[in-house]
Image (cartoon, rainbow, N blue to C red; front, side):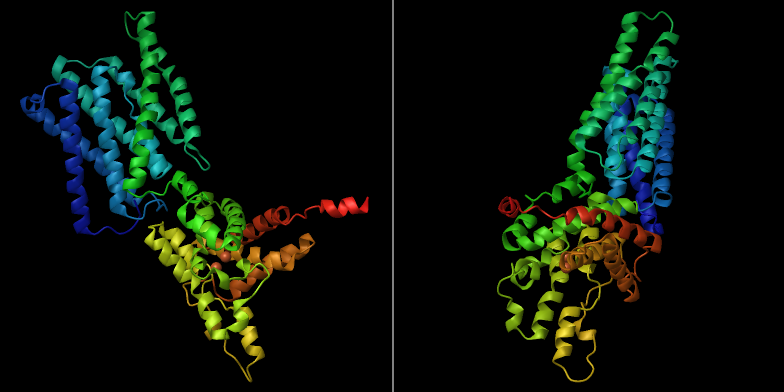
Length: 481
Ligand SMILES: [Fe+2]
Ligand SMILES: [Fe+2]
């Protein structure tokens, strides 16, 4: 949830919502554990104290999420994040209650909360939500056991502690560059490792047999395996219902089979090829300054999507043949070219793409001057000619992603045109592009630092030579022999 100001009215709304989630958790869990729908009515005082305790845990989680977690790019609406977090905690706890009472306390899959929140939102929030779920289970399960038997079994608590340990470990397998396979394999490996922790817990108990220990170990592993299964089922549902842009989805939208990219391949193959090269540069630049490479790649792939409306007017699609700008008056050419960022943004908005990708398409030229046409017009104009009419009329980059795309876009086009032969020439070109953009004020609305810009320059200069490598002409080689 974003660290933004929350009004008193919406805070009241969120707090009432937390009370509803607490009531669902307490009523459903206790009824499932006791298999007695009237248990809470018969134990009114216990019901109220459990409800207030669970509510307190959810409020602490909410306050942490709103005021301490920094904004993340995956979800832009605070309300959506609120629903995602609380519904995951509620669903997993209710499901855990079924396994707790029917299988074993070691089989509770509360690690699913951490796994899901880490992938859908952030790792820090995932740890907090994992701990919150453990505390809620520790409130509900022992309270019910005490009310039923007058005592709490040590084994019941140990099972939940093992669940907490795997929950925390699970958050650490979700990091940059994760894949579905890596997460599943990592989670199962954690399950195998953590299940061994149940051995000393089982041995501490009195009169345990080897079979009892084996059972606890098996159920611990099973709990983690179930957590992975629950996460795999719920993840795509949450991704689509709440439109969360996880790295999985960002990787999917970069697939060349996506309708918009297919359209680009058919109508503007030159633009697609340019976008692919920019995507490699942008991905490297994002890694260099600690941003998400999946998001940078997606921004690059779609930054020029607006060109599909008039592909024949863009140089990369001309293929050295007829240039329609030769027959157009300069003002018309300028209008067509400067229109592509807004047209791209419109297409992306219609497809409900993430804001960051839409902004990159809209802002990647900022309000810079269309130098080629300005100089062409100046050549046929007497007296002074102002640059204002030859500028893009779009917002300047407002995010670091838009700034990266602006630099990589220009770098790719300029390097391809100038074909530098030495490292120094290449560095000069990239330095001039960056300093030119700074002097033109293109980064004045973005919090990108000079250090970031220097790292971006370095990453482009490292990646570009291998992308410009010379192919050997085998026919010429044969002729020489
Ligand atoms: Fe562009
Ligand atoms: Fe471009």
